[in-house]
Length: 71
Image (cartoon, rainbow, N blue to C red; front, side, top):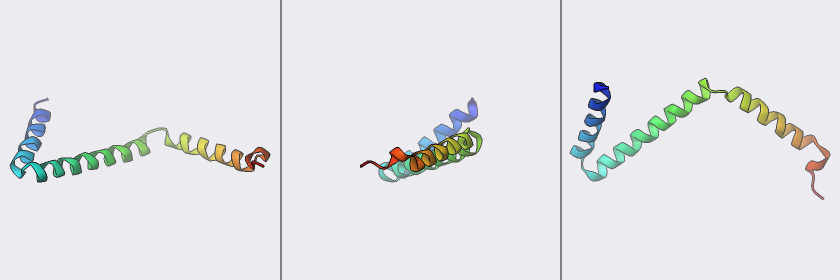
């Protein structure tokens, strides 16, 4: 818990010392980086294979069904 508070304080302090424009930009870049890492983590650890398989089966069914071509 202490490490988390220390880390957040260090990031906030760095943002303040860099100034408003650079600090906000750095925080935004950090946020996007963390979001990307979370996305990669969820892709590799989540049930994405099931989602991908289901999506492909449904897409194939939609493409090959006679009702897929509206007239």
